[in-house]
Amino acid sequence: RNMVAGTGSVEGQEQSAQQPQTAEPAVLATGTSRVAVGEASRRQPSRMQQNGAPHRAPAPRRGSPAQEKRRQRNNQLSAIVYVMASLVFIAILMLNAGGGEHLNEGHGTPAGSEASSTTIVDERLVAPMARPQINRTGATTELVRLQTSRGGRIQDRLLRYRIIEAHPHDSNAFSQGLEFLAGRFIESTGIKSSLREVEIRTGRVTRKHLLPPQHFGEGVTVFKGKVYQLTWTSHTCIVYDLESFDHLQEFKYDTMGWGITNDGTSLIMSDGSNKLYFRDPSTFVLTKTLSVQDPTTGKEVDALNELEFVHGEVLANIWFADKVARIDPVTGNVVGWIDLSGLHPRRSPAARGEDVLNGIAYDKDRDRLWVTGKLWPTLFEIELV
Image (tube, rainbow, N blue to C red):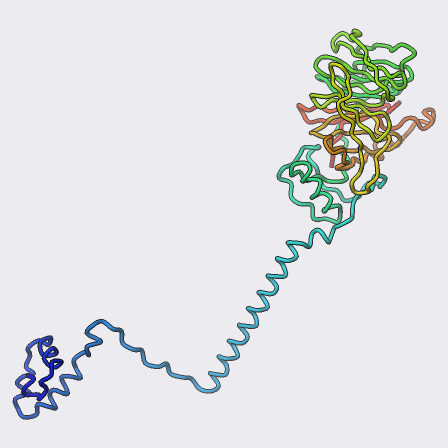
């Protein structure tokens, strides 16, 4: 084929070797060989195509000038929208990163403030590990700081109450201390000072031990089968057997005695100041003194009275105030307040203003909380909200 076509090159030989034998040689012999070879070469794939190289796509057809202008305008609009969306996204990230602290910084609940009408439900002082961040006007910055010191817990700064049930209470009892124990109350009273056991539902006194006249009864707590009762100014803690109220021993201390509770390890007592005193139950030796302050105001919290230990916090009545402080027993910071105003609105004129809130009892097995006051005719089971 190569001789007839006049192409004696190696390339022509390779093409000849690769093409199948067809009727094409007969065409070459007629004297129109160059034309036939040209036709055949147009029908055959090139070397690049034989080696598998892709065909080059034809250039796209361009539209009319109006269509081109419309496409360019659409591209410009898309670019503008993309840039604006990116800027909005960056702004949101910056607000989430630093905005919360500035929005709520410096706002808190003062120690003497009245109850707020907007509160958030708390599960009866349960430490809620999964509680969401509080995004309302309030001490959010302080809450974040406090939750860090409390192991990640977020607390409401101000709680109110809902009455679950009201029970009769001896209106002649000048209540100084209250403790729940196995379906009954252990109560300490002043003036006509006594230690008594009281039925919850009826308010009936089932056992009673009168103190000597030199002692004015104050706070009370039960620890490992023993009852610890403070006295006001005689600097004496009297220890009784829980079941018999038999006198076991006495301890002396230097301060006045107001309220007392325990955390399962130490006795914790107050003396009417801003101090909490931690003592060894076996010897009554002082192991730690803690100053109590409200970090939102930077002020000391004085007149700490009757105490109760609930969910890792010391609850403290404030003398002549219808509120309870919730105190971190490690730092001494007040982590929140319980506003109990209006719980007992009908005060007795005969009490001459002495019938103040005083007395907190807690049932840890059923998570129940009771409060009462000096000379109150009622004892209330409440839920915190």
